[in-house]
Image (cartoon, rainbow, N blue to C red; front, side, top):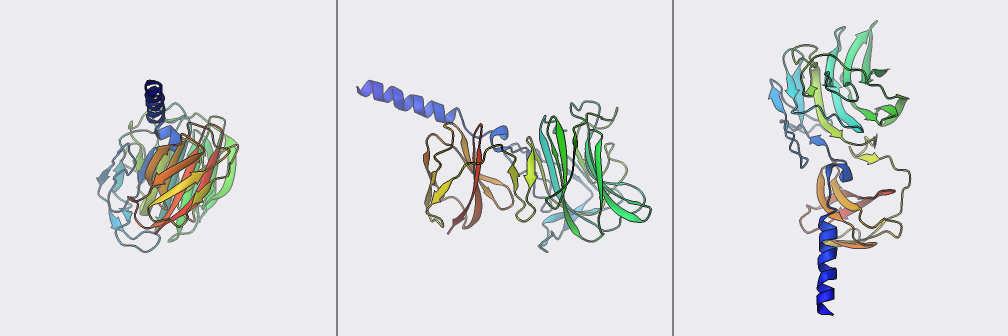
Length: 307
């Protein structure tokens, strides 16, 4: 009897470790806080290389929590193209001087891309300052102001692409596959695909690049997954000091539970092996967090407080 029990326990153990969080499970691609550097805070560590640039105040006025680009030679070179079948690019920007020459905020574009280029840029057309979105040739633009923070988001699925400004949907279009025939095989922030022109002048903060389609939430900086079914989740106690119990009668066995900071950084991840899961939160700093349960058919999100 004991031998059978041990086999069951071992089987459960390997089932759990076999379903740990991955980039696709929690949709973590790259997360650049840009707090004076280009370090990727995700588990991938896609750290960028600063060329020029300097630290700047972020949208909350906090010093050294954003990156300033001087409009001449500054850019950030990222180590990959992020050519995901599904992808979301989201960043905050503050344009100081929008002229008649295009200024690139972000671009990932060359002949190796499966789903075409992805780019964000600003330019003055006929005296009107505009933000331009491009995803595989599907394009959108909107009027913006100088010296004002905005959150720009491109959310790409294989059949449709959505463009957002400050969390508001601007346009939904058929996903395109257009791309350039040359350029670097790396994504770039603050310049074009050859990293020698179209320099951006202003600040960029909190760049996120993810391998799934998101709906942006500019109030917290968190982006929530587009899901067909949203199930309910209960967290007790809340607020909590040392541990929480997560309960969801609708959640599928084998999904994952992630706890994220308000900036969107993954702080904790665990496979959900049952409908009731106990989580130790002693390692978390006091504050507000987002708990997300992700399964094959449903996603649940809850706000938790660690005291």
